[in-house]
Length: 244
Length: 223
Image (cartoon, chains in turn cyan, orange):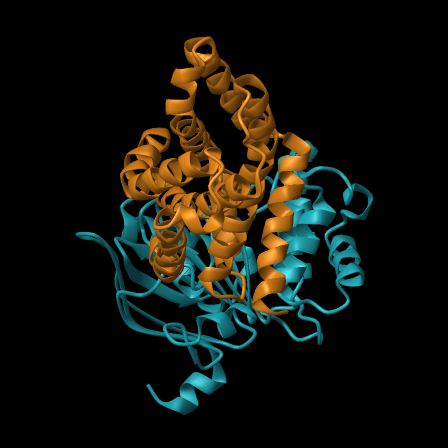
């Protein structure tokens, strides 16, 4: 992989493997994601989607292979990479006993966000949660908690968003609104997004390119321009053996 | 933001959460007071027996109270997978360890600050001396240094309440022995200089285990 390629792309993965004991969760995954591109990853449970996202998020270390994010190697520059990425999963990473504001303020401190108070208000407004900012997270509905989780991920203005089943608890209207908030970066340019979901229809509507994973490998890859939803469903059934 | 600012932010977050729920301090305090009370029923009427076993009673109480407290240290991070939330923050894993150690130390010291005067009152012992308070603080540092590490390890296991004491207690045996011996001397009114060699053992234990736990914490939370 040339240095040029890694500098023009947001994410470069080459021959990535990840094992947990004897079990190989990722088996030589390779992919390149351009800046501003939105890529959705489909796959059944155990396909390796979450493990891939966790490696990209620097939560897990690769067993072998190379992963570059904004031309930074995850093995050697994990701390620097974390400033470039925002992570939203079906788990919110929020403390139920603290208020939404206290949670956002805590993560703002962790990410060295300047003008913390103003930034917390900004992201809360972006996800439509200003009025509930001083409520304890445990008293908020699942959808509201997910909105705060999205606000948390946007605090440090990341250029790359990693979304692992992030639409959990959100109604379709809220998903659309929050997708726009996440998709558009601070400078108006689109953010690079990797999204994993089980919802083929929603995922298809949101992506520029789609991947289907199964048994730790990428089994199928296509641009949305060359595929319709019916084609995606057929490809998914063919690759995974799962009937929809 | 510096290493220490983030450490303080984690400690502050845990303290704020504890202030709201009082889950750790209230449970551990009740446990510690009950144990002291039970010892009082067992030995209170026999002052000669109390003199012999007082420091042992004190450290049995604090060791088991410590297990109870440290068991909860990482549970808050498991709810909604907040540990992953910390792992994606741009900081070294050691920040989490030090922040958690300080929070656990704070909770344990609060419990001990309430339990010690009760102990003094029930057994009519000179517990509130500089020597005994110093020993208590130093031994508690050792407890939380080891306990926070094992708490992070145990939190991902199914039987975490069982795993922590099984891992924790054998490791802290030298610390408990030194604590009992040093406290015995302190209760007998000995000066700092006369606490040798137990005090240096406690300090050495603290330093060694703080450094070792600090160095290996990242491996424990990453996989």
